[in-house]
Length: 109
Image (cartoon, rainbow, N blue to C red; front, side, top):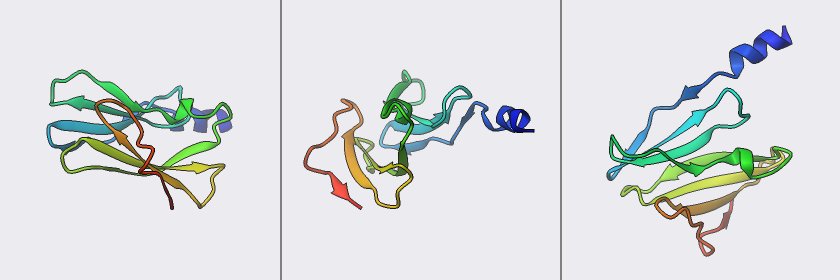
């Protein structure tokens, strides 16, 4: 039963994109990955680019992404990071185009 549940749960799936400005931002869960990966693209036909991959943020998988938000113009992506399934989180703000995380916009939540 455990094997079958794994087969049913670990499937490729994609969430509906959020359109902000001319950018589409969405997450996709790959069957071979534990956590969803966040992507973005410029316009409907733009090249898909990885925005944030929580699967690569820790070796033991202890880091989880909580809430996410996109600025109205699509230039910034904010997200919370939780360690070891803790209730406490830290919010970060990332420039979507460059992937650079702001050093000044780090907020303990």
